[in-house]
Image (cartoon, rainbow, N blue to C red):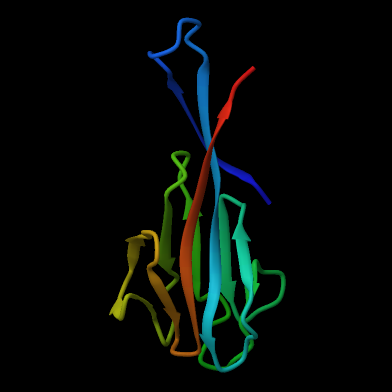
Length: 129
């Protein structure tokens, strides 16, 4: 699903000053897991929860994963932050345990030592009519 991140800039180089819109998606790729097949997940909600329980964005069925383990929040500028929700077995970004962390391109997210995801930002420029 594409949209989430939109920013408008002025193109001073053109005579008509057409607005440029930068849009894109945030994607999580499963790169290693005891319980999940390799897959990609588009993060398109303002808040996406990763947990063991049902009714969630990304479900990881394993006893080491908490019922409400971690969430990813998208800011209006399209930057993703990850927040550990006081999980029992923790969330790591690039092998460092976190409470809250801004996610950068290529960061590795480890959920309780059970699943590792890699984050990707995909942007493209579009003309506003």
